[in-house]
Image (cartoon, rainbow, N blue to C red; front, side, top):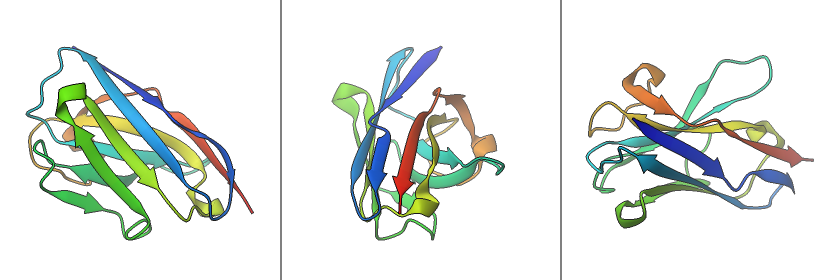
Length: 124
């Protein structure tokens, strides 16, 4: 079983940047795609970004394209989400997840392991 721990969330003003990290422990393996999702109060969990097992392929939600960048360091069992030009609409709990396979997808059902989440709050 793999454990995922997110960090890096916080309270920032609109226009600021944050970098989230997600470190895996336990039965880590690099042959899995990884993803970030977010959930705002009263809303369903939504896809943010995903990356293939090798890091060569990435996929973003339209709402964050051009502002967020997902990356991974397999030697450190860590995936990152660099968030720039943050907006109040980005306020949510951000979750890291490990996919069931190597190919990144936007569907939560394709992800088997989830972290506990980290809060990101963007003030206007």
